[in-house]
Length: 151
Image 1 (tube, rainbow, N blue to C red):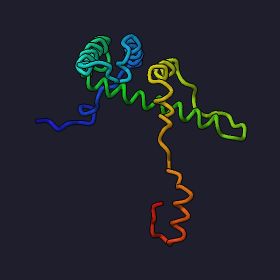
Image 2: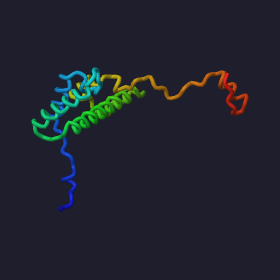
Image 3: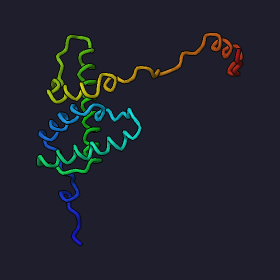
Image 4: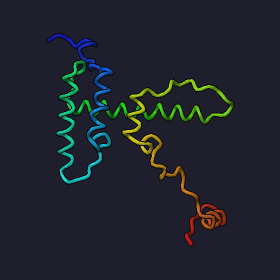
């Protein structure tokens, strides 16, 4: 058995044409891009849709992947695009009238943002970094030097 070389273990990369086609196909099938299940048995339906999508993407030429691998490509693409949007927004929010050093979003990235939505990019906004401590509870803790007394 021959040892595996770096090129034999490396996965083939998706082409730009395959990525554009993936976005086209995801725009045609509502809910597939988000992965949210709306009905009973929709997980099975989504699996069928991803298999169909994989067949179309593999037929184009370029990378040949399973449905699960194409789903991973989509997940990574969403994350990279989301991070790019965050980087652009962070640079725009900086003070000092500095120019933005990050390249603008491509047309494909803009379409991805439309598919995944602002909530995915910006986060749900309902999680707090910390829970504000009730003022009365804070006073009780100070008085008792670390002993917690609930009112």
